[in-house]
Amino acid sequence: MARFSERVIEEIKKSVRLSTLISERTEIVKKGSRLWAKCPFHGGGNERTPSFTFDDERGTYHCFGCGESGNIFSFVEKTEHVTFPEAVKILAEKASIQLEEETPESQRKSKEKDNLRELYNRLTKTFEYFLTSRNEGRNALLYLEKRNVSEEMRKKFLLGYAPNNPDFLYSFLKEKGYSDDLMMRSGLFSARKFPYPLFTDRLMFPIRDLRGNVVAFSGRDLSNRDGAPKYINSPDTPLYSKKSLLFGAYESINALRKDGSEAILIEGNFDVIAMHQAGYETAMAPLGTSFTDEQKDLIGRYTHKVSLLFDSDGAGEKSTEKALMMLVRSGFEVNVHHLSSYKDASETLEKIGKEGLEKEYSASLSPYNYLVEKNIRRYNITMPRGKSDFLKSLIPFLSALNSSVERDGYIQDIAMRLNVSENDVRQDISRGKFFEEDSGRREKEIKDSYQDNSLNVAKVSMDLYAMLILSNHRDLFPSYRNRLRFSDLADNDAKVIYTVLENAMREEVESDEVFLSLIGDDRLRNYVSTSFLLDEFKEGSVVVLDEIVDRITLRSLEESRKLLNNQIALMSSNISQNELSELVLRKSKLDLEINVFRNRLFRNEEEI
Image (cartoon, rainbow, N blue to C red; front, side, top):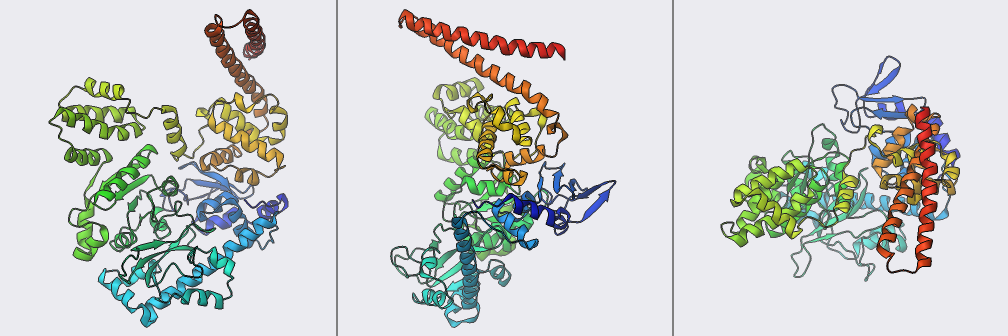
């Protein structure tokens, strides 16, 4: 990751006012001594009552609706959907500040990405030109008309045509001054037969990042040649990772920002376009892969409501079930839609038009009812084996639920459908160990993927509380790390921040903005950013820190003593007297240390 000097960060902070950034997106109002706006994150600027307040002098903000907090850098990161280094560059450009990145390698990579963006955006216009203004693209244009794709959608998705000439692409880019090295890294040519292009005689679907830059292509074959793949997608490049983007995501952003919006997850490029054309402007699709965690997290930035509309064939059902499990496990509200007349949204639009697609799409099922209907067709639940197989098919879904109450309700329904007792259902679940064996890992995955970004100080662990204090007083970390070891921490979030504090200490990071950029987890970054705004973590918090460190140390010592006691009990008959004496001596030393900490803490409590 590119690193910038503290001087540059401070210069940007002094030059760019938060009010300028916010006013570009929503209206600012003053109430009393505070400035307010409608939240640009959870409300998309459409809230009735402003819940987003900011301090222009300090350059910080907080939303009382969604809990987002931060500064000018995090504001740009989240509204422009960019990384911290990219946010620094955007703000530096606004302030006309010359950036000096610290490493030549980061400069080289940044330059390469800029060149690739220019290349892709230029090529997108060229492919559009071939589609609309050259005879070579006439068949592609007729194909779009046959598929009932409107001119509005063609322009919205920047559709184009790659000509049926294997020499065109290389010659065109060479003429524009692009080097062979850049072209080989662009993902546009065969890795084995450079300069043979990946895309010839294909309808081109540009893939855009969340800022609207074209970073890749998906090409639909129009040649009907034997053996030609129906679709070819760009490989991963320095600009593009197919597991992290969704086709149609950028085109859906404005609609997703509206309150109550839902993302529609669909299967193919034409299906996305068909849904947008029918008025469902939040439809998007994976890019030649199954649905990924990264794509789930991308959707989670905007909404926790998702509708699934994959193809109605066997492959589509598998895709539906996999995506459904991932989303339910992460706390999303999910609905499943099924097109009964035709295979997919594109074919439905083509055959029966927009009104027909709207009618087909209107019906939906909950994840549970979708799985029940699917598996009732699959298994004969009038027979004992069918009952057992039906129950097993639902266990992954039941184990993915965050709510025990919801799970119990479904168990009751399963028992009624199978005409068996609830106790029998629960016993089968327990006996067969159908739930994931590592429940701790499942709980961690749920916690990690659930997008609740607001910091509730009353609910954080003492481990995390200590790390938040140290994040606010990083000059104290070198001394406290001698008293508080990484292994003493029991909270995984606290361990993450401890590691960041270590890195910040080694790299001599001073500014809050650079420190926040070292935190990879959006939720934790928001926690720390919020703590910077709270008086609770200012000077007085250091007094509390000593007691918390003592309590964490005491807990660690007691855990060690517990393990040692178990070791003595289990091994006393199988080890020599000298070895046993050594274990007992270690336990005695632990007892003394524990008593010291207990006495100190107990005395402090009495004084309070």
